[in-house]
Image 1: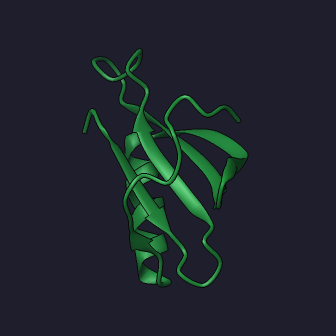
Image 2: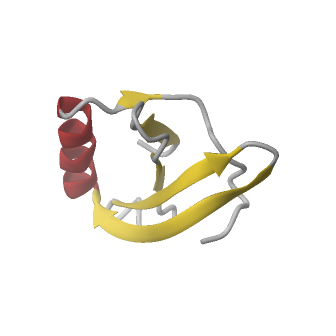
Length: 82
């Protein structure tokens, strides 16, 4: 999985960025999940970052899709900080 994926709630614009933890990937795959909301013309409102096993991150993604979230294009710069 070494990459990033984005998913967004179409009702609220809440967005999650799933990206690999490159330091752990080869021995024990973990994923960072950043949550926030893009703001037009302003830096994004970044709320949280969690560190999940790849399996748990996959389950979270599947649950978000099940409740109506949709994959989307990147919504903020990867250098944006929580």
